[in-house]
Image 1 (cartoon, one colour):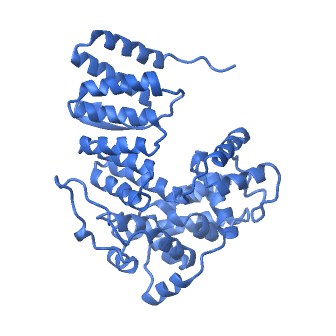
Image 2 (cartoon, one colour):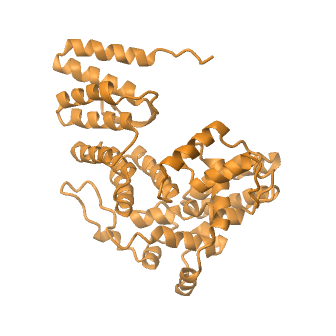
Image 3 (spheres, one colour):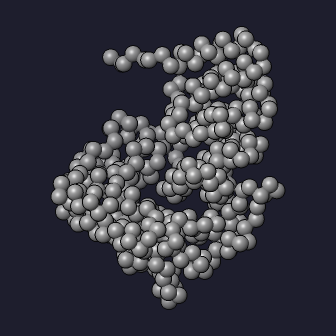
Length: 400
């Protein structure tokens, strides 16, 4: 880590690269004192680079990236483990009044550990307040405050939007390519910046990194105006998704499920959490996974191709191959709206399922339908699905 940061200091990379590196460092979970010291030194050097273009890195961490700085604590509070042995889980549980993990229940099969059911909605707000007010050294080491310090922090007023919004925008424009993950306030600040309206606070040099294409930005702003999102929890949701992917890669399925059970308890009608609950449950309980996937559609989940593919995978595993084939056919004839985005998918192999990070759901759906059709002896449907799969794999001519 030290070598990379030193090279960055000599080369003075673009602001976007520096902020992305800061984001990665903050989200890391050192497991030894040596790694923790390297993390602190990395933040110091990156902060120096940002100061050269007039960005106060400490304010960026406190007001634009509090969910990243405190995510390790957050994760430890809603799961049965800790991302780092350096984190004092017992003390943090006491401060945040989180029930001990020993009281967490399990399902009938003992496979899925439940997230805490009450007394946890306040965690993100209090952790943000801690990042906004604690000593930076304590934030970087996750050092819990004393009772007196905690009492003082809990009484501190929340910073105004005029302070937080610009730093949230600065973080998002440099780390998030997907505009659907931006806050509406960030979209508006980017619009003002691109159209030469005053946004204050940051220099031209600090905003020199390439922002989103104007046409795409305008389209997302218009979409948001027609269908505004009322939640402001998206940053934490995506952080949970990133953590869940790491758990799935390690075959820690129960831990991944716990993250979205917790989020769903805070936001009971969030179709994304329901869909992700189903996805994380697929390797261990396809019946329960199917329940959540179907419920996600009922509550308006929009990535239909991915959801249908996942449902068909569950149906196939539940020996309901005919239903899987009918669902795939119904999607193709009635629900399909190209182009379809790629995403995380479970893809079958000889030992079960393998997690694929950039899978094409329609190609995998067609392959599943071919497999099921052959197993059922439906030759005509096998041929039809093979033609569909071949059409998806034909290289498209570049637009002129």
